[in-house]
Image (cartoon, rainbow, N blue to C red; front, side):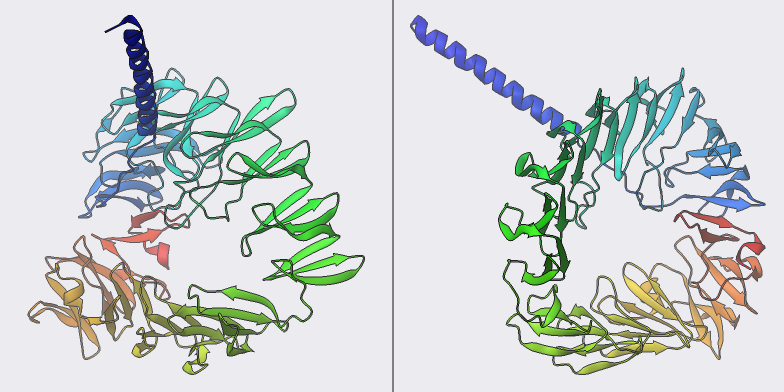
Length: 587
């Protein structure tokens, strides 16, 4: 092998190593962004309140931690790690705390201070990071797991949850902010003065595709940039203002508005579509267009910079699919393609999830339906129309009542109901008449399945329950009626009514508790049922022992009580639940 050939091979080898190293770094960096949020499959522990103090019970109603704390927080209800707060100041939200386990033993006390990490802007029944805790040491903060293993050393001045991003943590060090994940891997460098989530959300992915608006303080004030969800800098921090058009659903591209020296530009990812020469740019999600203001006049553009309406008008107003343009006190009507409209039949045409149907709104604010050819299917005679599914529509009349019609304008349900709505994840319909609380259920062909006066409704993942003091009916999401034995197949005993009174039977129908109660519940997954006499509730267990004689009074407008032992469930306005045996709470 000659010398030149050896040199070429050596150069290629070095380049290959560099490429492989680069690929390795990229893969490593990407792997750092991966973390798994723990799914809580079973709640084993619950807070309970007694005499305005808080403790912990288990699924059998046993008191594990006496109710002697101002607050108890359970970051993961499947694990016996309880943050017990005392000396709590409601004004500052601060207090002292200890961590105890299910044996009421203090744990994790090798650290100066241990606390839960509250989730920010996330709606959940467990509003905490579910596998990590924050600890304090020498006035700095780090992260440990529930066993006390250190994930991140105490090197940060602050640690908190990142908005809308469970598993991501906002950290502060030397007056600068960055982001790490729950494994301790750095996602954003600690060099920013501000970091905000861009609030991009899709039903399918939630906030997973959302990125970050970051700010760096300069001699001229804060300057903002944008970083995508993979940590790539899309815009450097050199703008007066940056915002994402979150209404534009596109998981492959990011649409941004950025301001420089008081002028606004429009970008697709890092590519400038509209240069920084506009006073304002406003996105209209319904028509997927931009209203732009330049030199105090307005025009309309699409997202590829094509001018639909010239930038010459004193004012532009979008009304559905039409644009009203005013100049010198004269109004001109355009469609979104910029075509002048001499006569406007409808002020708005709204697409539906069915490409064959469009809801129309005329100039008198009356609703109708037309097909994609523009043929009128339903005249504009209704105060409101909402597409249901198939050929069906929910309509409202001038009496504020609702009903259902089909695309041939045939009334299938009279317009007399206070509520008409689709059952989520099914093609069934629920109706409610408020005057006597009559709840009706209809199948996918709008045939009545059940109608019960003075009733309530309970929705589960797999079934719907409609019930009153005298009757209980269960239906699967396929519209088929089910028995309570089919719904609660793992239970030993089942609620049954006889001659207006309720008791319990086994699977073979043998009476186990006599029909002496005004109302009962089925046994819940923890093995407890509610019993009602004379308007008051108590509880029994699966051994058919009375744990609490009926003493609790509940608001009849709400669902049946749920018991663990003698304690009944309450839900706060923040969505957190707890149990209590305080009689006055529900009176």
